[in-house]
Image (cartoon, one colour):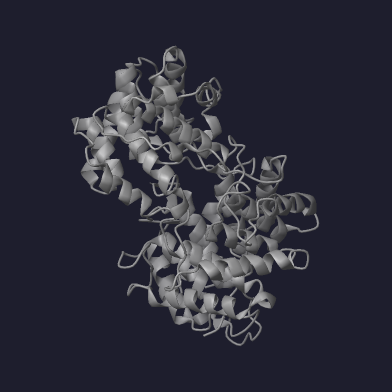
Length: 561
C-alpha cells in the first residue's frame, strides 16, 4: 500500500453518488453564507454540564440576585432565582438524556440532589486515563477541586507537587492556582495560599469580559475567591459576567466562542472546496487582523494566549490564498511556531518548554511545508518525532479531540507533504496509520470516535481525508455515501462533537461538523477526475488546505459529483 502522489491514479467521478454534486454545492454555499461581513465565522460554544454545575453551586453559595443576560440575539434569561432555576433545568434535562460522562454526572448530581461525591478514585481514573500522561497530576487536582467546589463533604486530598506552575501557559497557571486555593480550603491547608496566588486570580477579574473567553477558568477562579475574605463584590460581579453567557437552554458553555478557530478552519475548507474568492479574502482579512504581536493566533477574539494549532491553520490558509500578498503574516506565524519547538523535534500546544504533543507536531510540520527548503531540518525532526511516538496499532497519544482519527489524518497528510523526508521510520508510520484507518471503517461507511463506536460525521470526515491518500477508491466511496445521507439543506445532521477542553471534557461548536465535512469533500474533489481525464485534479496538499484557492465556486463545483 502506498500514499498517492500528485495526479496519480485519479478516481473517476462517476464512481461516486450522483447526489454528491448537489450536497457539496449546498454545503459550500451554506458555509460561505456563515462568513460575516467582517470575515469571521461566529458560532457560540454550546452549553456543558461541567460549567453549568459549577455555576449552579456558586449561585447557591452566593445567593446572587442579579440579571443573567444572553448573548446578542438570544432570549433573555430571568434574573436572580430565574437564572439559577434555568441552570438547574438544563442540568436535569441533560442528566435525563443519559449522554453525560461520569465526572460531570457526579458533579451535577451533587448540585441537584445533594448526592455526595465520595468516590474520587473512579473519577480521577476516568479523567487521567483519557488525557496525556504528563497532565496526570494536574488532572487529579482538577477533579478534586471541581468536586470540592460543588460538595463540601468531598474527601479532597492535598498534593503540593500538582500546583507547580513551571512551564505552564497562562490558562493552565490560573486553573492550577484556582484548584490549589479550592483544595487548600477543603483540606485545611489555607496557610499554603500565598499573596501571589490571590493576585494571579484577582488579575483575571475586573474586566469587561470573561478573561481569555474561558468560562470554565472564570468559574473556577470565582469558586476559589469565594472562600477568601474581602472578595464578595469581586465574586458577585464575576458571576454576573459569567451569566452573560448563559445559553437559551439555561446552561453555560466551556468558552464564550471559538471564533478565530472556526474562521480559520472554515477558510481552509472553503478554499479546498473552491468557494468564491471574495469570501475567502474576507476571511483572510479577518485572520490577518487577529494575528497577535508575537506572530501567533489564539482561538477567539478575546484571548491573547496563542497556540500552534490555530497558528498552523491560519498560516496554511493564507498561503493557499496568496503566498506573496500574505508573505509577512505567514513568516511571523511560522516564526511563532518555530519558537516553541522542543529539542526532540516535537511541538507543544502553547509554550516553549512544555511537553511536545503528536497532533500539534503534525500541525506544525504540515504548516512548515509551505516553505520546505527553509524548514527542511525541522520537517525531518518533526516527522521522526511522530514516528517515535506512534503506538503499535497506528494511533497516537490523546490529543484535543475525542476521535482517534484526528491525529492520524493530520499525521498522514503532514507526511504526504514531505516526500523527501520519507525515512524507513516515517514510511512505517504512514503504513501503520493508513492500515488503522482502513481496518476501522464501519459497515455503514463511516468511522466512530473509538473502536466499536457508531459512525459519526466528524470522524468520518477525518477518515475520508485520510483515505484520499491511498489508491483504492472504495473506502472513500463508502464514506461519501455516509456523509451524503447525513446532509440536509446544506448542513450535516446528527454530528457527535469531538472538541476537547480541558482534556478529556468534550464541548460543542456546531459549525465544525459542517466545516470538516466540506473540507473532506474538498479533498475528495482533488482526488477525482471525470472519465477520460488522466491528469485529475491533483492530490490534497496539507492537513487542511488542498492547494491554491480557486477564483469561484461555479465551474469547479459543477464538475465534482
